[in-house]
Amino acid sequence: MLLKNPLFWSLLHYAEKAPFLPMDARKDLDGMESLGHGQPNVRQAGWGLFMKLLDSHKGALRCLEVKNGMSLSHVQSV
Image (cartoon, rainbow, N blue to C red):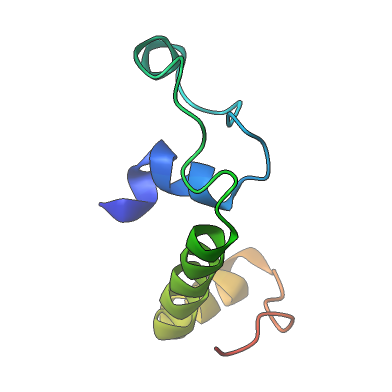
Protein backbone atom coordinates (compact mmCIF):
# COMPACT_ATOMS: atom_id res chain seq x y z
CA MET A 1 0.00 0.00 0.00
CA LEU A 2 1.22 3.45 -0.90
CA LEU A 3 0.84 4.99 2.56
CA LYS A 4 2.93 2.23 4.16
CA ASN A 5 5.88 2.97 1.89
CA PRO A 6 8.46 5.30 3.51
CA LEU A 7 9.63 6.37 0.06
CA PHE A 8 6.21 7.91 -0.59
CA TRP A 9 6.51 9.95 2.61
CA SER A 10 10.02 11.03 1.57
CA LEU A 11 8.32 12.67 -1.42
CA LEU A 12 6.54 14.97 1.04
CA HIS A 13 9.57 15.57 3.27
CA TYR A 14 11.67 18.70 2.77
CA ALA A 15 15.08 17.15 3.46
CA GLU A 16 17.44 15.77 0.83
CA LYS A 17 17.44 12.45 2.70
CA ALA A 18 14.40 11.72 4.84
CA PRO A 19 15.55 10.81 8.37
CA PHE A 20 12.61 8.46 8.99
CA LEU A 21 13.63 5.84 6.44
CA PRO A 22 14.42 2.59 8.24
CA MET A 23 18.13 2.11 8.84
CA ASP A 24 18.30 -1.02 6.68
CA ALA A 25 16.61 0.85 3.83
CA ARG A 26 19.00 3.79 4.29
CA LYS A 27 21.98 1.45 3.86
CA ASP A 28 20.54 0.20 0.58
CA LEU A 29 19.58 3.72 -0.50
CA ASP A 30 22.53 5.57 1.01
CA GLY A 31 23.21 7.53 -2.13
CA MET A 32 19.53 8.08 -2.91
CA GLU A 33 17.86 11.39 -2.22
CA SER A 34 14.28 11.67 -1.04
CA LEU A 35 11.90 11.21 -3.93
CA GLY A 36 11.44 14.47 -5.76
CA HIS A 37 14.32 16.27 -4.05
CA GLY A 38 15.31 19.20 -6.23
CA GLN A 39 12.29 18.55 -8.48
CA PRO A 40 9.53 20.96 -7.47
CA ASN A 41 7.05 19.59 -10.02
CA VAL A 42 7.42 16.08 -8.63
CA ARG A 43 6.98 17.35 -5.06
CA GLN A 44 3.94 19.37 -6.09
CA ALA A 45 2.41 16.31 -7.74
CA GLY A 46 3.10 14.27 -4.60
CA TRP A 47 1.34 16.82 -2.43
CA GLY A 48 -1.55 16.92 -4.89
CA LEU A 49 -1.88 13.14 -4.70
CA PHE A 50 -1.75 13.22 -0.90
CA MET A 51 -4.44 15.92 -0.71
CA LYS A 52 -6.62 13.96 -3.15
CA LEU A 53 -6.27 10.84 -0.99
CA LEU A 54 -7.28 12.84 2.08
CA ASP A 55 -10.25 14.30 0.25
CA SER A 56 -11.45 10.95 -1.11
CA HIS A 57 -11.26 9.32 2.33
CA LYS A 58 -12.82 12.19 4.25
CA GLY A 59 -15.59 9.94 5.62
CA ALA A 60 -13.09 7.58 7.23
CA LEU A 61 -11.17 10.55 8.62
CA ARG A 62 -14.38 11.98 10.11
CA CYS A 63 -14.89 8.67 11.96
CA LEU A 64 -11.39 8.98 13.40
CA GLU A 65 -12.05 12.61 14.26
CA VAL A 66 -15.11 11.69 16.32
CA LYS A 67 -13.49 8.62 17.88
CA ASN A 68 -10.31 10.43 18.94
CA GLY A 69 -11.76 13.87 19.62
CA MET A 70 -9.59 15.49 16.92
CA SER A 71 -10.56 18.26 14.56
CA LEU A 72 -9.85 18.05 10.84
CA SER A 73 -11.71 21.23 9.97
CA HIS A 74 -8.50 22.76 8.61
CA VAL A 75 -8.24 20.07 5.87
CA GLN A 76 -9.57 21.62 2.68
CA SER A 77 -10.83 19.90 -0.43
CA VAL A 78 -8.63 19.82 -3.53
